[in-house]
Length: 228
Length: 83
Image (cartoon, rainbow over all chains, first blue to last red; front, side):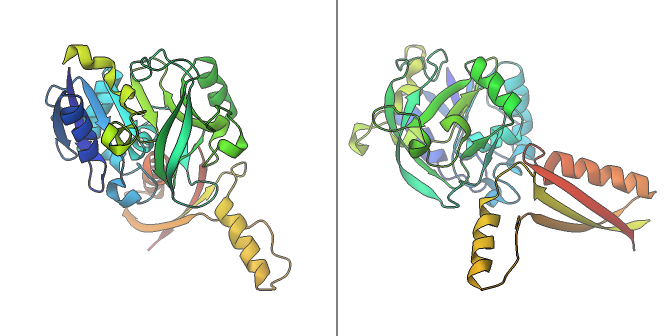
């Protein structure tokens, strides 16, 4: 299993993500450059957090048309694993690899804090190592994390079990008070219909090492440990 | 033919626009009376060279749909004026 982490101009979690995959988990991991068309034979692509292209126009909108994304879109459409964290999630929505859009937080503020998440579906490669409805703590850091899709799309992703994580409080209550950004149904992370593309606003790569005081996010990446 | 393109991109009517709400409240603080329904969008302009107005319009339409607006949450309108 070989992992690739894309760097766009303005990405700022690319090194953290590479560090967790390569140094913490021991995965064969390569850096991918936004101007390249070469995916270097990877099996799993991560689009990291940050502010690709300065978040100009809309978050993720410009990155969607970068050279590497043309390859990532083809790779995903052929069934390859692609995961977007924070800005990466925004890029995947703008690329139509995931449904919906991430709008400005209802508070209009950039929110940087630990939040609790309820794991809503454990039947995907990034959630397999959690238990159903488990409550985990993972940090968020975004101004545009307010997940929105129209009623029909929300109905279909809920019915298909495409919601992976929901914002909740420490006791697992999913409600308005535990919703940091206004996301519909407290949605924090989703997958596509065939479950090979994943997006989440919280940062599991920032919660993957004991030395940082939180390892709740590490299991997102652990499914492939046996295949290293 | 060359055209001046003026594009307005606005949040869809059914989308909550917290920015507009905050600005409306702020206008209230100025004691300006009677202002309601403040919504905030984007204005984009550029020039375009094309054989006909229809061709120019088709290009602008594609630019709006593919990049300039996200039609899940935004609507757009534009005008073309020959220059």
